[in-house]
Picture (cartoon, rainbow, N blue to C red):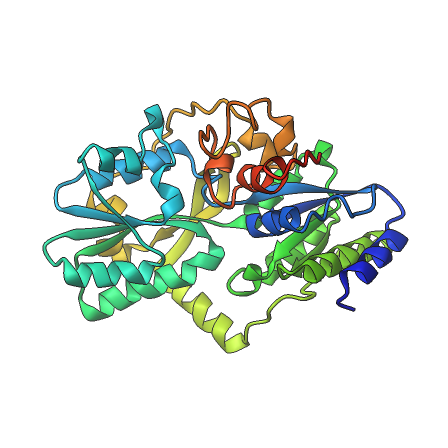
Length: 360
């Protein structure tokens, strides 16, 4: 069944109790708002946001490290566009130091672009702040291994890749959240150990489903979870996800294991979570900018007046923040959930506020 109207009718038939689903991925949150799904869902089915926006969960201490390294002599920092304006302590950002002529910062779309830049600029050190979740780790690992194989020594990475399963586990320990299921993106089938999500489902009595980003995919995922909840099951359903071959998964995991290992890591608004982030192994320390420039991730000064911490942990939606749409807009973002292009506040503002819709 692929027809959204039929799927909505089926969903309405099987939702027989109040259900709260955490939408883990920011791309799913954006799609749900774009499709105006909340208005069409059964009244007993509530969707809340999870921590799946890498810019939204970036602590100021990590941004401070990005800025400190960027200001070193002969360094070119190459990063994604969303990271440019993310403020650290004192609201200093990569964009602000670039505007002041204090650093050279380039915008790229993938870590492989950094190697091309390193080849073109042999007298500069190209630094890549690697932000994202476990799905981004294979491409970063592959780039580091390629640099090592070619003997490119003017390229290095600031590792700031976070892992969702241990973080969701930490969030789910709050009994007041009353989350019944997790809607996950098919990114998890590329590198995440699906056993980790199966364990989450069993440990916290959750219905889980991996889904694509089309309207029908999301609805089918919600139907799967509603059926699990109705029958008292706690499963991890790959549903309509894109399934990658075992060879691709094995190769990706091998690269990631060769380059990274997990350590306790800080998350903005969520604190430090055990083994929830990747760092680079000592054997590849030449490509670790934190070691190359002797920089540590310190605790930064959080000066955000918004409620991003509440929103990314399922405790509220953007309208629950008094700054949303007033002091905090895409033109004047206060918090990272509005600053990031896939942040739920930015998506909510774009698809609700700008269209004259005020959906709670």
